[in-house]
Image 1: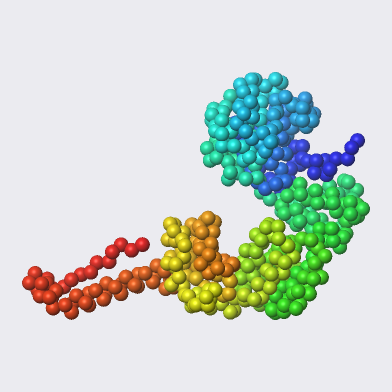
Image 2: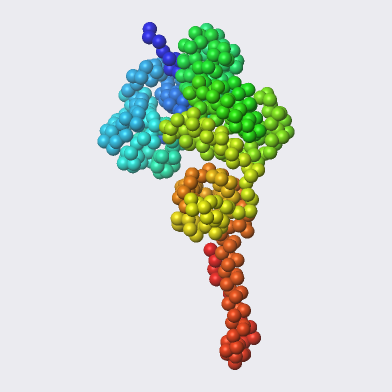
Length: 493
């Protein structure tokens, strides 16, 4: 028999074998036992967490002739075995990535009117359904709204936001969550024991953390580690295979950044340079910063010698985390990852928040002229909603690090497109690349909106004084027996 990879060999075949999705499994088992079957299910979540596996288990349960405990498929009847073997006539599984066109969908829908050949339901499972074209979605609408009683649709997707809202509203949505490190680690331990693979607990945790919530990824990573370690997993070897640095390296790196020791930072990077995953090092540093920040609020340390960092200024930790987060996007550009990592860490030292000026934005343009916020607001190439939102913000800048502070209600509605417009307008005007940080600590007296109101108020005051000094104006008003003139404010936006 040919070798079967772990991800396929240990794929769950019934609800009891599914891990990390207790809420979804409980809901589906109750639905099966009570016979309250929906005509369309939408399984959503990140990769490798069991969307299609659970859909197949549900399909088996709905058509199983020998249900166990009235909820679990038996995996022995003709219907169950045919689905397991991929030979079921009444279970049609489609990959939307390869069959996404309107003609493919029409051909599929033509078979819906036919009754199941040997099962209670004819079930259609469309994987990665978000890949369907808009025309294909529209063709599905009528069948989703009023399907024949013998038809059930099941959809699986990693990007449900790309699906038409009219499709989502016709489905029962089952949201699957990322699996926790502990659950993945325990599952790997059970599988390795049955596969007679030796391991230590720290090795399991490293693999589980690298999987980022995906059971399938954890098993795929395990394949590589098992081959390298010759079926005897040890922490150091697993770190070498996955390129995971020792905790001491991350702690020393953070200490050097906080001490502003550039020489030590570069030395640590050179020693780490043999590893390929420089993005992982930055993420590990951000994880440590996050742990410290949380521990500061909880008033307790943790196992990673965090106690040494608890006295660090919380604002500085937030700054380092935000800067790291904003630079992660650069790793996807295909540029030298080591250079990106090095420059990111140097930025963390160069743009320390202690040096930020808190009263105004002073930036030297290429012509070396100084400009101030909110004075430059009207010069920014910005229109529409983005401009209206920005005029309510105060801005603080240190070198190329720009902090935009909005009122809480404005920050809550500021979307990614508007942020991109605002960021581009600053970078185009200043002719420099900037790191943007957003918060709700707005200084209302340093906003374009406040400046405009003060300016308008001053204009009205000057007009009133001028008119009161005008003898002709006073004579006219006296003849009309008007004692005073009231100046009404115009509607201001």
